[in-house]
Image (cartoon, rainbow, N blue to C red; front, side, top):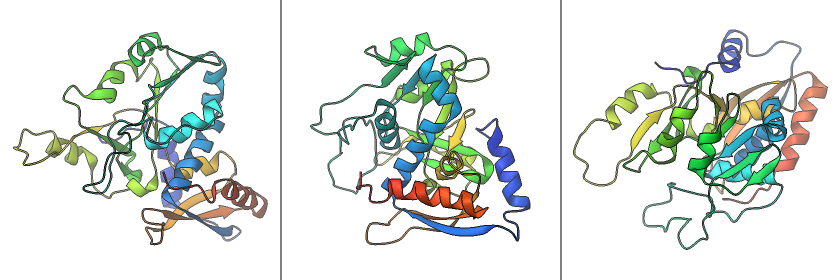
Length: 272
């Protein structure tokens, strides 16, 4: 199994590979830092019809993570101390983890429009078909519709706990993940390699390749606000743009303008 997306994303990739743009399309460039991308993804998530529906009637579980911090902020309408809503995360070698000495916040759960003060395990047991679990990832192969997440906890942590509750005729998994995490590798091969029992000289996580769920990147986020085509033309940078992405937005001029207006709402987002 090499695909983790069951749905519209396959058609998006197919459409873009066959005919990315037309002669009539107007182009605009969008340049995003990593934090701006995270905020953009969160804004797009909050506009998804299925999310709006489940916020009113149903259950949503937002698991911990950096991008999920922004999603939680958008859904609850208030800021969260960055670092308090994290489990494992990457920082430069020798730097203290961002959640150290922070008052930790548990998974955020919504039920029928209200935020519930119940545990993650309790919430999982209450999930019904069509409800939503948000869980981010660490690697993305967009063209293969693959996303994977690092597993550091011996028992599989957050990820292994929700897996029995998502899939066909169960709750739906949405995977918010930035294009900064893009790789050309087949993640099924990486999963097999990292999950083998080789001796580890220092910490090396295992890897879980999502077998179902909706991948949601900056591309999908922009498409919630404008009827445009979106594809990258550059990644990386310096002076705070390390890991960032540059995107082409193409389409009718009025629709491209909508995308540019959206850009204004995330520009200047402070680094996480």
